[in-house]
Amino acid sequence: MARTKIILIDAFKLEYLKYAPYLRSLCEKKRHGNLDMGIGHWRGVDILFNGNSEIIGNFCKGSGKLKYFKYFKFLDNLGRFGRFLINVLFNIPRLLKGYEMFKTGKIPVSMLCKLDVSYGKHVGKKSDIDFFYFGELDNLGHKYGTKSIQIIRAIRNIDKKLENMKFDLIFSDHGMIDVEKIISVPITNDCFIDSDMARYWGSEEELDKIRGELPMENGRIIEWDKKYGDLIFLVNTGVLIFPDFWNENIVKGMHGYDGKHQDMKAFYLLNENGNKEDLKVEELHKILNGIRKRR
Ligand SMILES: [Zn+2]
Image: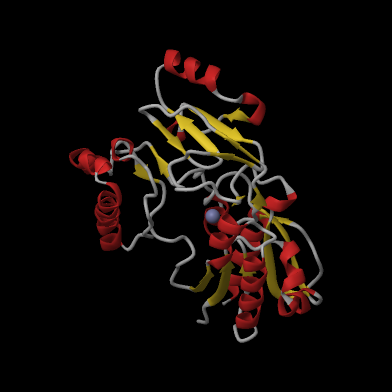
């Protein structure tokens, strides 16, 4: 049985085709277009492979799998060395389970110990799938913005590499937008602050107080599973929350948001004849399932 070949180009959007002559030539004959990934960071990719997903953030409340961190709160005070140890302690159990590893940014240990990670094994790494990942555009887009020379060069490079790669599906997990405005939000003892979303847990009284302090003109409250927050504030597309739990510095590009803005749209290209056709990720999931079954 042949494996389905999938290439993920992180943070690639349709507009970038102008810097990618090879991909553009493929698009002249093949089915491709914008891909609506919906709300959240990892949820769209989860839906593509599994059909549905509730994940809107890397971290949530759960069974307290990171409870062991309560003995390591002192590491918050040890600067870079402390963070290095936090990352090691965080990732060793993940490594042993074959889960995706990642850095913990600036998440305070006092908060980390109350949480679970929302995902384990990479959703795309399945036994019937050859999965290849290009990660450069995400890092460069955050750091330099979406119109930077660094982005253009990296797209050209990826485009060249693609010339020698077979695929059934090329897709991106999200787009990217240049940050237009920076806001700050309250940081409490029981919250998680992403760059585009602030999530709080607490009593009605505490939540009321937070509601009063949130800059409502820059976002809105969304309803979601409470394990992601009793109160979830999602900022408007192009607004950046800083300070957050991830970034050391203010970044120039961001993604996440509610997925509706053109710049947030991801990209897909199928290795079958067709035209430009914008899809929702749920639709692409069905198409991909068909391809996997035919193999
Ligand atoms: Zn990113």
